[in-house]
Each structure stands twice: as structure tokens, then as C-alpha cells.
Image (cartoon, rainbow, N blue to C red; front, side, top):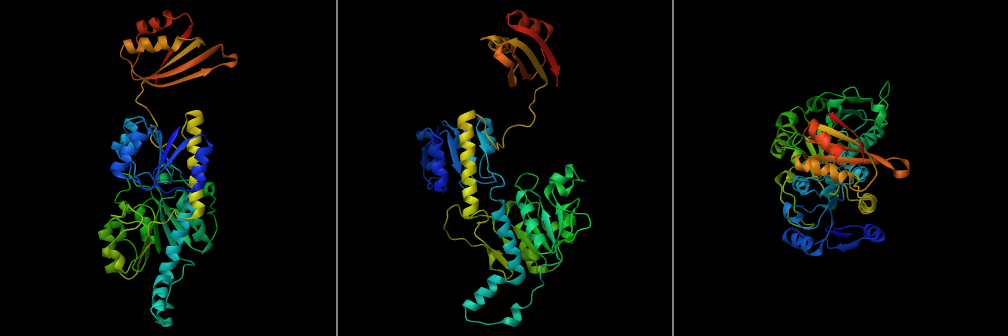
Length: 411
């Protein structure tokens, strides 16, 4: 199996792919048209990327799997991949601790103004009176938007600081009575407290620190808008280590100016696509706004874990045809009926069934064939986009002697 790695990647990961029997091509400089050509000419079946944009034009060769060596996959045209039958997989949770550590670092830095302390001392100025003014985090309230792997790790660390935690997440809209003990958080009679609320606005109302941890999608794009930011109390802190597109940055700049909101960002609109480049965002020049270079997942520990997970995904695909962590399979097909075929395990039985379905213009959406002990018989479950008439069922039954029975189930 040919694997093209088109972003910086750990040596342990490259060695792991080679040990799995893959032909590994490693060129982290490939981008845009060069990457299109490399995929087409190399015959790569698997593409591994981190931050590189993967477009539809890159999917016309032999590619059958794209692995995002990280959690988010908004840099990949998932719709184009799905239309071509290309799996898209990611490595969820492997960098959660790294991102959580940075988020907490930004929270502490904003409260104690650590970067400003350092800058003043480097400039030869001593101002203990000014920098002694800090609120402290103990007893404050941390608001979390989202409660995936990263947010949960942030919550654990915030608890160690003695912060109360209030949470809104789309997962709790489905299950608003969720027991947080299932996530490892005790809530009854404990300090600091952990609580789920019904809306993002309620979190903003109560938060001394608001931290965003949602995936980017149609429901979350622009989630943190002027109305939500306007509900933060003056002097509160705002942290974003998820995706820039979930925040209205014009509105964010406004509340920084008007309400003294302090801000820590690891993601930005219009980020450079290369590792080094000029970057000018006026918001970053405002006192009380701290930025880091989209480095949340960039620790040695996290990158090694992501590399190991990437190897596991590719190895599993190579050896079994199955893809762990696949993100673009439908949860429910448009199938309306299921044909259950109990049959003797002989060549040509399913081919006969499919021939009848094809001739009658009925599309097969999913198939599962389960073999009984000793491999003498099997049951095929075939999901279809329409019903079969009694005549069609009889044609399947009578057309092959190894068909034992048929059952048509309405889904």
C-alpha cells in the first residue's frame, strides 16, 4: 500500500508505516498543485496530512483513504471525498491534553499578565505595583462551550485550581440530564462545582473565563457572536483554542475595547498556511490580548500519540479493509427495505440475487453476509432503495437452487 505523507510527521510514525508493509513517500513541502500532481503520479492510496488543505482536485487518482493526523478535519473537502468513496479518518483525543494545557496556560497568563511581565522586565523596567494586581482563579467560574475530550481535560485542570465549572454542549441537548459522573466528574455536594446548563448564553452570563471547545460545522460557525460576547461580565477572559471560524472577531475586538474583556487565542482568521510568514492582526496589538501560533496540539507527547494512531489507522485499513475513526460514513442510508436471504454458502448465489435486483432497477445500499459454523450456510442482509414485488421475490427464489428462504423487511 502506497502512503503519501504531505506534512511534517514524526520519525516514529514513518517507521511504523514502513513496518506495517507500506511504501512510504514523505514530502512535507507538497501543497496545492504540487500535491495534486504528486498524488496522481505516485499512485498513492493513502494521504496523511496535518494542516495541508485537501481539495477535490487531489482526489482523482488512486486515493482511497485520507488521514488527518489530528482531531479536526475542516481542512479536508469531506463532501468531495464522500462523493468519490474515499474514507476520511482522524485521530480524536490524542492531542487533547496538549491543547488543554495551552488553554489553561492562557487562562493563567491572562490573570497574572505573564507575557506583559516578561516584556517589561526585558525592556529593563520594574513595576511590581502594576503587576501585583491580579484577581486569582480560585473560586472563579470557568464556562466551557463544548465538552469533548479537550474540554474535559481543561475542566479537570480547572478543578485543581478550585474553579467552578459551567458547561454547555450540543451533546447535552440530546441528553440534558446527563450524569457527569460518567465523565469522571462528581457533582453532588462537591466543591468546586460542575454544572450543565441549557444554552451557551447561560454559560456566558456566569463565566469569569469563557473557553471554547467546539468542532467547526454549520451549527457552530459564528457561534460566539456579538450577542453572546455581550453577555460576558466586564473584565472577564475569553479563550479560543478550537477554530477561528466559530468566533466573530470584529465583535470580539469590540468587547475588548468597550468592556475590558481579556483574550487568549491560539487560532486566528486568515492564518498563514506555511510554518513561517508575516501575520498582522490588529486585535493582537491591543493590551490584554494574547496570542500563540496555533500550537495547541504541538507537544512532543501529542505528536507521538497522533503518529501512533495514524499508523494504527493505516495498518488496520491495509490488513482488514476497515477504517478506524472514519468520519464520513452515513449513520443511516436512504434504504427503505431489507431483503434477508438465507442460502447455502455456494458460489454465485449472491451474484444471482444482485442480477435480479439490477435488472429491475433496484439499488443495493448496504450488504452483510453472515456465515454459519462450518461455512455450509449463510444469511445475507441486503438494504435496498425500494420494495420487491412477489414476482421479483419468486424470481430470486426460483432462479437458484441454493436460496433457502427470503424475507422482505420494511425499514
